[in-house]
Amino acid sequence: MTSRVLVALRVPARPQRAFAVFTGDIGRWWRPSPLFAFTPREPGVLSFEPGEGGRLVETRSNGKIFEIGQVRVWDPPQRLVFGWRQASFAPGQDTEVEVRFDPSGADGEETLVTVEHRGWESVPAAHLARHGFPDAVFLRRHAEWWQALLSALGASMSEGGNGGGAA
Figure (spheres, helix red, strand yellow):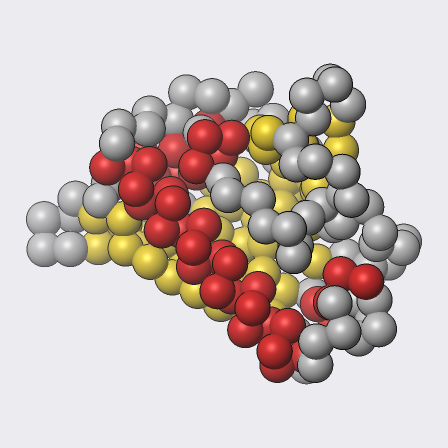
């Protein structure tokens, strides 16, 4: 059985725009979490290198780059899959994020953005990334963070995010 988080939120944009803002403007709408930081240092700005084989990276103010994961599926505007790791993950400790963008609403002007973050069973319960939480509590807290991130994505689209920031 896989340990996973599954959250969804409807955003005010067609799938093409939702995919573009998710990937191209991630540095603008992403909200770092001290609980789920990629590295123990001050958070940087996230960006995607588009296309399969591209990367999701965090660039800190000093220019150093941390690779969060490689893009495994880049299928605009329907689907995005990428690896996800924190600096403290050992080899073989690998999680994966799948994001789906499904048309929604009577007029098709909205998108249901669904995030599935799976593979947490590869990260032992005693690992630093889990903060000592039992599995159910850890997954619930992680799901709450993803829900807040999707809310920030939706707000970004309402404010006019255009998806033009991808590397």
